[in-house]
Every structure is written in structure tokens, then in C-alpha cells.
Image (cartoon, rainbow, N blue to C red; front, side):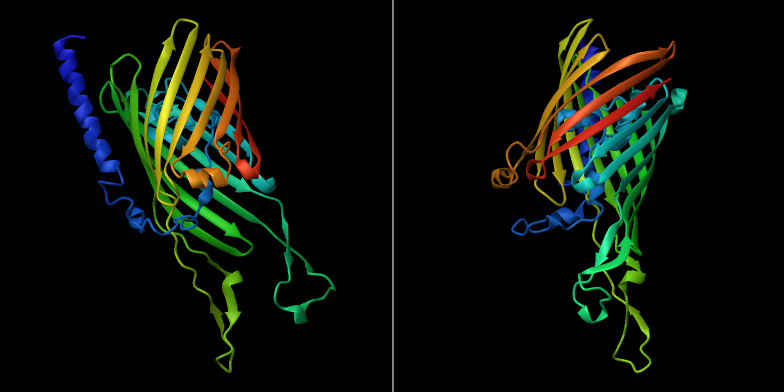
Length: 361
């Protein structure tokens, strides 16, 4: 590396650090919810928790992916990574989540030459119908047990559009805007959010740095017929509605790095680390490994290390262990299919199995 290239790299590093400082919750007003007194638990203080469920092959790598982000799943982890795509990709992901809950994610990424990359994505969390039960109004029961014979459902969804572009030959920028909805029975809540990400190729071998803030946006509160009641303080008994407290979204700041510790023609071993700072739970350090054989077969492993050892012990230290595998097949001269399987240990909630597929063309 000559002196001129070194000066250019230092300039880019300074630019990257300056932009990271703007994103960081410690230097920005973006995550004012982080100002909650540390003596009080932040668990359960945010809405739309489904936005924190990771997708793609990254879930087999401890979700340490912000500095890799080289496929259509980048629209979830770090939208800046979409600028690395050279081909169109469609990505689908299914997760068997806890208690018979299903999580599905689909995204489509379209590189537009020198203009940048555009991506659309949809997240859906669904579950089977559940029966309504009587709790505190026995006089209204029509049956001897607690069953009402009536059913209700619940669903969470997010619709997003992302755009990424190279700022320089080493630094890329990405932005995602989201519309978020949650519904249960005849009540619903709506919110909006955005993700902002940076990805920097340092020029030092394969070292990459990344920073992003996700799910920064409006607070959400429920409304609907399920919150209505008869106000008995008036003789005419007009209808009234309970007002729910608005809750913020689960805003998260990520800083990551990735490096190929082995890089040969047929063998590549990539290591990645993400430092995660959420506004509603303890910080974590995510570790991930991915072994790539001939760009056709993949093995992955990872671990999510919680910063609170007592909390980690309570949920079991194995919680956060992950592993995965995948392979790529050419189904046409210009069409590739990648299939991925990921396993995640959920501690007391047992295991979560995830399947993903990407078609590149």
C-alpha cells in the first residue's frame, strides 16, 4: 500500500467514524428511549417485538451480519449492504417460532446499474385462531366451562422499501422505510420507522466495518372495538373507549466488523462480530463464522453473548447458540438457487428452526 492510498483510506475511515457518530445512540438524539434510568428494567417497554426476529443465513451465525450483508437479507440487517449486489435476488425465509407462531419474510432486490439498489420486503407473523375465554364475568356465561365458543386471531406485519448506493468505491449507504401494523381480535396499531446503515470496505485485505440504526420511528398504541365499553356514569350510557399508552419501537444500534481469516480459491472462512445496543434490553455481542467451500457449500456457527451474566444464566447459557448449513446450485446458466437451514437455541423456549432460499438472476 503506497502513501497516497494510505491517505485515501485514512480519509474514508475518518468519514466513516463521523457518520457512525451521528448514528450512535450515545451521540445522537435518535434513540431518546435509551435515557431510561438503568436502575429500572427496560424489558417489555417497546412494541412490535417481531421486528427483532432475525432472518436469512445470518441466524446461523449468531446474527453477526451487518458487515457482511451481501444478499437480499441485507434489507433486514443493514440496508447499505444492498449496494454490493450485482444481480437481482428474491429471498424467502420461514421460521418456526415459539408456541406455534410462524414468521415469514420475503424481499426482492433490484440493482439499477450506477443508480443504486432498490429492495422491497414484507414481514408477517401469524398464528392459528385462539378461543376467547371468560375471565371475570361469570353471569354472562352460556356454558358451564370457561369457553365462549368464539375465536380471535392476531397478526403482525411490516412493509418496507429500501435503497442503497455507493458513496465512494469503499463506502456505501442504505435507507429503509417501514409501515408497521399489529392486530389482535378487533384492535390494531400502526406505526412507521426507518433503518439507516453504512458499510465500509477498509482496503486492508478483506476487513469490513458497518454501523446501522434500525426501527427508529413513531410510537404505537392500540385502538378498536375491543377497547370500547359502556360508560355507566351517564344515564344515557354512551359508548366510551379505553386509551392505551403509546409505546416506542425496538430501536437498535449495531456496529459490526467482518474479516476473511482464510481466503483461498476454494476455501473461505469468514468471521464476524456485531455489537448490539437495543433500547429495551441488555446489550449483546454477536459472534459468527461462515465456511465457504468452492462457493457452493456452506457451514455456519455463531453465538449471541448477553452482557448481563445473571440474565444469561437465567435464560440458560446455551440460549444464543446457532448453527446452519447451505448450498448453491445453478438451475440455469444465469440463475442460481441458494438454500439455507439455520438452528437457534432459545433456552427455556427450546429450539427454533429456520429455512431460507434465494434465487439470483
